[in-house]
Length: 459
Picture 1 (tube, rainbow, N blue to C red):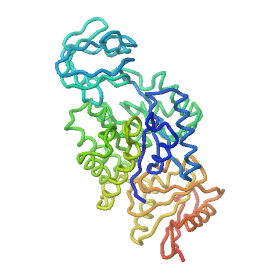
Picture 2: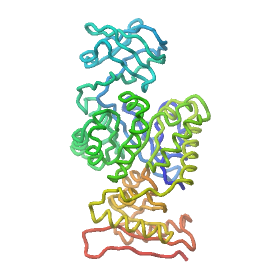
Picture 3: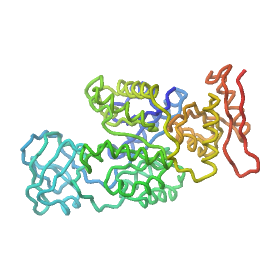
Picture 4: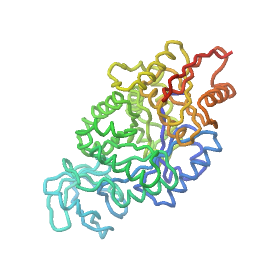
């Protein structure tokens, strides 16, 4: 079993139980994009995924991805435009004639002649040549498709929109109601944005839903360390980063974010355009293979497919290839240096000690955790050994399913000691450990005078 985890975005391509079943065999979590669909369709995806858990005997993390404070193209039929074409953006909900509808006044309040407008993950660029009341006329610089729901970014500018709008609040209510495991906050600009989302979830009675901060704007990069420290997890949204930065800058920004998350001990996910050609093709390009290989080599926790599994023609092949490439990368990866990791807590030092002990012994690690914190602490060190994390709380098991190197187990128990014993028996029954294996058992540091680390040989 590999250490990197895999997440698929659900959508029309994976809306049937048969296709979703096949995809689920290769992934550890699913993403629901709240920018599309409604509560009825979101709930249907949640129910399908939870049914698959019982069918496969496997737990999945479900991430609800908020639309965020973005400006998007309104309702229109997909339209291809070529280099040199003249198009008009108009303030309205739906298209009339050839004009492009933009239902947010904020776009027209800041757009100016000479600005470059980007959409479709930066592939389509338009230079504005004329601005008037409720319209902006532009000349297409790079050909591509204009599609409803696609974000519009004005290069070098950001919209002054609230971090959690009305639609996002309704999506958070849905996430709380159905008990999602993670919520991804889009267009995070500051740690205050993360705190706001956390406060809303607490108000809604679900403070244990973990928050993923999506890094996709200049403001987020400027306050990167603060945002990482406030977040439970970080997602590198490369498509939107390509709207705010030049494309040649994105790889170095990705590396910066990954390194920062490693230093501060936060899980990190890489997303967008990993295997984009597989939206239409059954095999990836060589460049895509190299991209995925490199990301896995850097020790990211998870790789997330978007259009490939949401609207692509080959969703099953896409997840198979993603896993195949990452596992090959892991075979040739080198241990990451732990010297640069910031360790300020004795519990982190304990976790590191257990990890190094297991690596020196060539042992596997078995944790029993009620909160998941000990497992998260150990995963931050990117151990070269297998970690089994048992918990009696289903949400904890699901949340841990997308964390690097963690294999979570659901164990019904009341005490730590019983949890470890039951978990060990389960591993023996499932042949996850076998004769000759060494296992280090612990439940981390607690508020108690005695702490528990036990080394056993399987006989």
